[in-house]
Image (cartoon, rainbow, N blue to C red; front, side, top):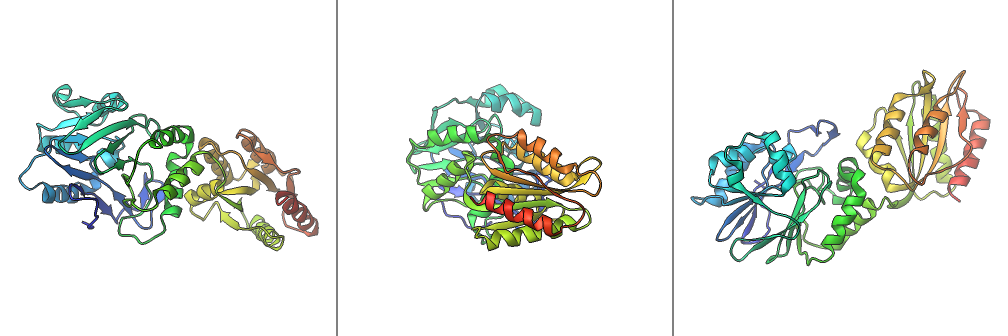
Length: 388
């Protein structure tokens, strides 16, 4: 177990999963994933969440090292997603007198995951603002519905001013990975939590009244320094505001002609002074990173081949995913390619029209098979319009 310092009374007992390749069976995690769990040792002993069943054995060893001959009095269930709840039943079987702390939705969903005998006798039902005193430490509970499941709640430890924030402020990657928090936290946020910006904003308003010294999320590092940086990032992300001045060019090309065209387009953007230009191949590049970059920058160009009188499927999927995550407040340009009946532009526009507050630069640029001088002229005008 990685030695993670929290305090004398609060210890990290989580596990780094270095073998996982796809988180939630869809997101590439080249640096693995951390399943965070914590123990608070006072007159009563509290475990804050369990871990994925992939990591149960190591987690139990970590727990036992901290417990010694003592027993667990309470298990706080912040979030029931299997990467955090996977070891609940095993812990109940090991400590049958242990109480389960959760809210009404926690206990409504829990029987869907596990058959727990005498569940009502084990339940400690909490609601907004309730507290649980365990000695010198007092836990206060704040509901965080749809961040990013309905039963999610945060726990604030009043003595040491620690916020246990469930999945909020988490990131991809193991704790022993040396990497910048922002990139993988952004990719994590927009792909997993991004749809629920209104709910995140509601929770941030609650947190504004708390004196927080440490944030302990269920994924990623323990956050202690410059907490305003992380909270400000969440405020920007959940407000659907662009984080940076730049342009994402996202394309899907069948035979390479559309790819060649967007490479020229990127060159023109740079020549005309764009602050940042990112080109993403929706067929071969990391799809989750494409979603992340779409939310990160204030401008986007989508370029795709026509296909079966529609749009090449990787682009349709990309735009569908953006819409499902409530993508909004951006300037967008559309480029289509087709040999005899270009159809991609119309299809992309219909998808973008379904998003909120989108400024679509007119007209749609049409490429007939291969880029030519007229195409380049159109690109020049398009870039000037987008950079106004």
